[in-house]
Amino acid sequence: MFKRYDQKQQFLLPFNLEEFVPENHIARVLNDIIDVIDISAIESTYSEEGCPAYHPRLLLKILLYGYLINIRSSRKIEQMTQTDTAFMYLAAMQKPDFHTICRFRSTHLGPIKEIFSQVVTFCKEMDLIGSSISIDGTKVKANASPRQSKSSDALEKEIDKILKESIETDKHEDEIYGDSTPYQIPEELVDKKKRLEKIKAAKKKLDEEKLKKVNITDNDARIMKHKDGSKKPSYNCQVAVDEKEQIIVAADVVNEENDLHQMEPMIQNVKNTLGDKPTIVLADAGYFSYDNVEFLLNEEIDAYIPDNFYKAEKEGKTRKFRKALFKYDEEKDCYYCPAAFEIPFIRIQKRKGEPDLRYYVCSYCSKCVLKNACTMSGKRTITRDPREHLMEDMRAKLNTEKGTEKYQKRMSTVEPVFGQMKQDRGFREFLLRGKGKTKIEFVMMCTVHNIRKIADFMKREGKNLKEILNMITRRGNECGNRWGSVAGMAHKLW
Ligand code: SF4
Image 1 (tube, rainbow, N blue to C red):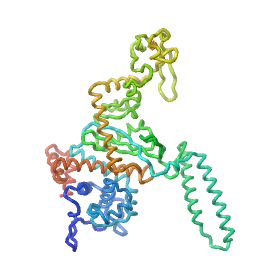
Image 2: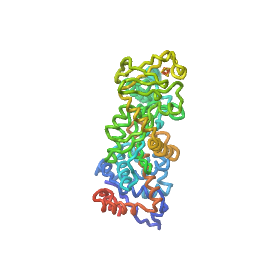
Image 3: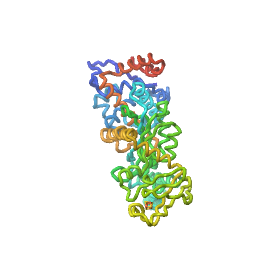
């Protein structure tokens, strides 16, 4: 059961909520979109009994609007519902307190992800999504101090220290009050007890996951290096952005610093949201691995991902002759060096958990005039991974005019998205703690990013949401059932 929520209600004083925000205000777009999406997943978590709750659409709207304008604190949002006309419009003059706002945000990861998906579907049906995506990650600081990241030894020392201090405090209290005083745990001890619990939980995590350090405030965060060179407890926020209108089609938060293992989950994420795989995928060298390239080949996705040495070698930053200058002959299983000598296969080099490497050694180096530019050792050696042809094919593709042009699109697709989030919306640090809750925050950030893109599109086209829905429904009628879901949304609004 919900409290009555009616934005069209009449007041005794002659004012109308519709007059609180201008016609083309972004809050109206957000309002209309949240009005048409299905929130039954959230509604189903409420009980029919007890006091009527604030309507989930109201809470969703004020939270998302807060994220859109860089106001994320629940206390600040509560305050804004009393002072800011856009918040008043979205909340229909109701004033939920910060506990309600905070609780709502922390407990609905699944439904909030579902809302993100619905907004993406909406973008797809508006024709804002193409078939080429860029995948990238950015580090966002956790809500935790770097000083609270500690090693196993440091944690044990602190546990001992707190235990000793607690015994001392106990003794002191007993000396003062004796047995006759009704015992109340002193405040100092309560704080110590809480700290001890936190440290013990952190220590457990550190042992279980065999970590070098763990953060006491946010156990899930990991120390990560940021672009400015600083190291902080952070999360790695992953996005897949469509090239056409910079719509985020998939988002996730992981606590692995490296992007290497995120390609497959992100593609799966895109499939779940869009119902189809992308045709083209662009990603930077952080995503290059033979496993990833093989996976994308098997998925029949046209991928453009340079390897770690591609750029350095292309810019001639490697000190000695780069490997790409050595031509591999598959038939003879040998390399030809820049001085045109044959470098034969010599032996197999075993590796733990990886395919064996093939080892090639040149025996002409001592007489070669190019030696100083080629190698510091007596003989130049080359190793070859059995999957190295994947890297060679990828490099060849990236070196074509089409490949270079395609890969450059990555920068203008995904990098502005992180810029808009961090610069424009101030998203440089999480407010919530733990992997689950940081995911909620990030998915909300991505949802408002997409809503902003929808608003930009509407402004460009000079249309309001009803007209857009009308257009989509008309198009749907022409193409069969494809636009059925949006037609359903439209009827809700009309
Ligand atoms: S140093 Fe050896 S491998 Fe390098 S170019 Fe000369 S002969 Fe070839």
